Length: 202
Image 1 (tube, one colour):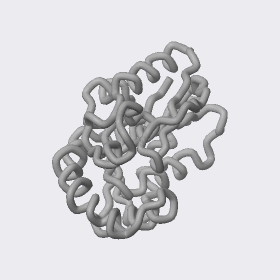
Image 2 (image 1 turned 90 degrees about the vertical axis):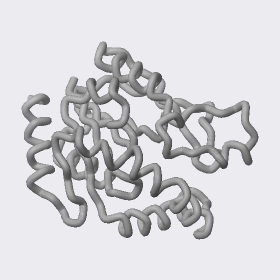
Image 3 (image 1 turned 90 degrees about the horizontal axis):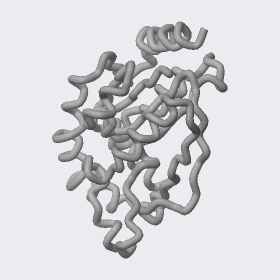
Image 4 (image 1 turned 30 degrees about the vertical axis):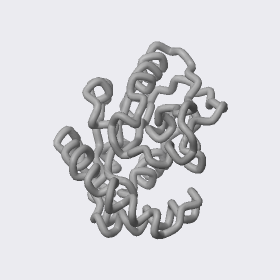
């Protein structure tokens, strides 16, 4: 199994890069795991308490479970991937049955910050984007998809997202095998990744 890690700041365009890589690849051979599914469950906290959690700090992620799930997939086992709700700031009772694939893509802002995960990635990619562009994308997404208002998003960006990005996310670019600038459609980088995947699939 080829495991590809795709990191980058919030709103950097990781999902777009994943879609570009998967485009033209056989869907049955490639699976995706999102770090967002692996936020720790916080059933012991009230909604207001959960809303105060710093979700951009590595301790908010259940890296142990994510690493174990990748090991299970690599061993040919199916996993029950958790489902996380950004509306309630908590895991739901649902899970997604995920089968092993020849290629697994793991994407998330903090996946390169964890040494155990880094060791498991055959290819490490960092998606680079301008901070203003990332903020605009984050604003649009959080308001449209997560029920936030503009002031809430801006406050979180200023107080949490930006300092956490500078402390934990941006430095992980040093671990990347490939840095993809997402200010334009970077066909060369995408084609290189696709070529490596195709070699493994064929």
